[in-house]
Length: 132
View 1: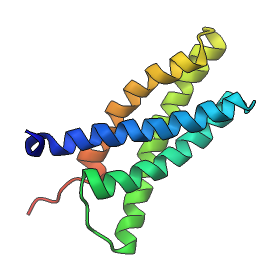
View 2 (view 1 turned 180 degrees about the vertical axis):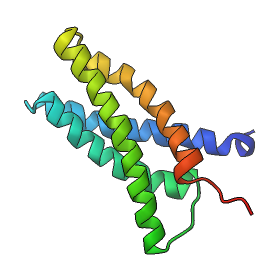
View 3 (view 1 turned 90 degrees about the vertical axis):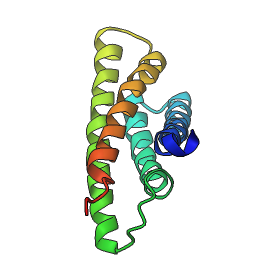
View 4 (view 1 turned 180 degrees about the horizontal axis):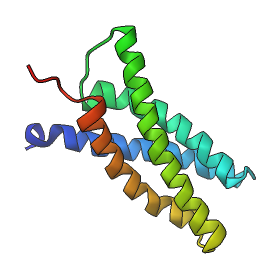
């Protein structure tokens, strides 16, 4: 069963680890008084780098190592992650500043949306297998 769903299972595991990195940074920074939007930007940036490396190597097993390929993948990956990160930030901003929800709860709920969107971007655009 693992072999059949290997990619999806590993994506979920890496996604959990990426989310843990994101949360650890976000909650640590907000706990020491960093403004939540600044903490969000920093946590997203670090999470993007972590997710790129782990998804490339472990999830999608992309072995292409030419510097231009890696640069193009990182740029595309980062671009799509910045889009989903911006969406998450906008969700945080609207729900915290205008609707007065707790930022921690909104952060957790918004992450569900982000994980799903990022899988689609990664599987079908960034690390897609070339048809021969």
